[in-house]
Image 1 (cartoon, one colour):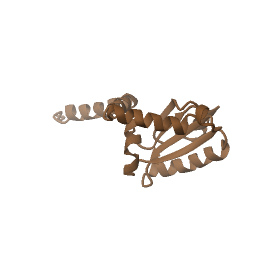
Image 2 (tube, helix red, strand yellow):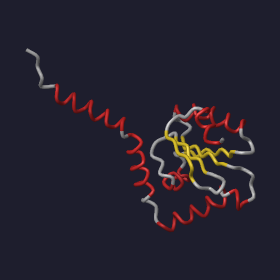
Image 3 (cartoon, one colour):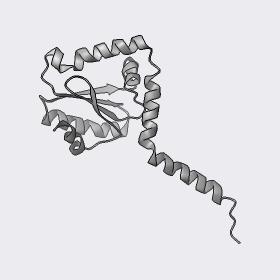
Image 4 (cartoon, rainbow, N blue to C red):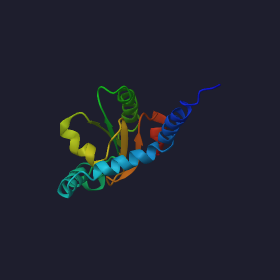
Length: 151
């Protein structure tokens, strides 16, 4: 006779992991929104002002059309793979895309990481010419997929 005492726990654990995979992006969004709510209102205003000064190209006179912000770490394997992709984007779109790397392990970047709600790295955020977010991706993304955002 087959022993079924392990069947239910195994099915429950497998179901849990399948649900995590299915709802991964929703969970990341929930965690990001929660993290963004941790900043006090005055810090949010200060960060928005600073971001607008740097990345609002319509008002600061720079010629870029997009900003690609890569949130990562120098010790993360997927982040290191993204370095090659970022370099290719810099090469293919030198006047169109400003590529910025934010090291999430650097304490001076904590407010930016919290403001953008980054909970998983690598993460890419693309801002348009006005400094508004137009695209977000978590994990490794190929050069081809990333280039589609700039056309």
